[in-house]
Image (cartoon, helix red, strand yellow):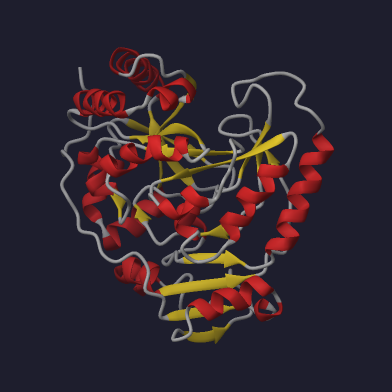
Length: 365
């Protein structure tokens, strides 16, 4: 039986991804070579110096901007200097969460958690002190030594998620930070990079990762993606790119996240799995693996979405299927009810095994 929300997905529109017209920059950005490079890429953009990339008057916390959610993502870029460098242990998608080289995104996925921390505008913020970030990561990785034993993250190498707060395929349109990260992990003896993406940027095919960067293409049924994956690459394009990125030297995994339950979700996922199965080359199939994360939604993000994309909330906000949980930061999250979610995870596993045989699931929750 399908346990789903009241509405089937309906399509939404897309527009040009980036046309930077306003640049907010912290003092000191121009002291860094990467900062000067980015400024040179957008010579016609208005430049506004702000005290902090986290506190931009008139941008962050301005409820009136929610109606311009997509326009701001398209037209605004923020440049900052990352102050705190630390790695956080993970154990699921990666062993370690690396310090981000960016946060925010030009895409507008309705379930993204990053906007919860910024309020009513969430454009890309790029950190220009890339040399410091790379140096910290290299020292951290080398301190770990060899990985002592295989685990579900990777059998041999420490894995660092380098894209927790942004989509690196889009970040690569703005700067060479992503190219530099791929080059770093290419030469580290005991580590690899990893990031999830919803955007096919074929410039990355020339980065020569030599197996040391894992790209996780995020996938869901296109019917749902048309509603909630706003401004992203179409699903068929992401699927078609898997073989190309494997041939270019990337490890490619599948990121089924978030899994959204709605009327007809089982049939839609079965069709998605069959499409992937038909597209995979033998080389891609031999190295494929999946991670599965069912939707967790957030009350504050729900209110933001109602201001710019209420149609998405018909899929994301389904209290009859969900229960509330207070987050560590004090926010109110909604997730699928425990008993129901267990059954849905089992259904998902069965569908994947039936329609995409031979694809292991690294973790599912």
